[in-house]
Amino acid sequence: MDYHPGGDNAIHQSDYWKVYRNGEVQGRIGYGSFTNYDLITDSPVYVDRVLMNTPK
Image (tube, rainbow, N blue to C red):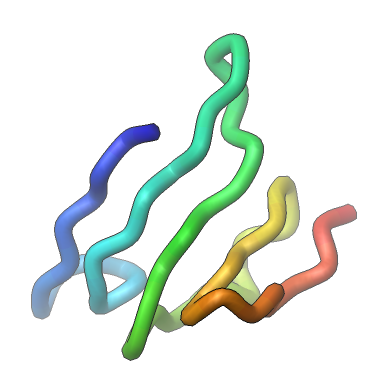
């Protein structure tokens, strides 16, 4: 897992974690005000335990 801090200049506006397997992103886990998850199409995004997208 790789931690990404949020903040005013962060694209997703809140802290989140990227989950990796063998160097490839397998998904992201965010909470609360995690935004712009619709831009992520390569892996699942969970916000507050809810799947927010459908990876292609």
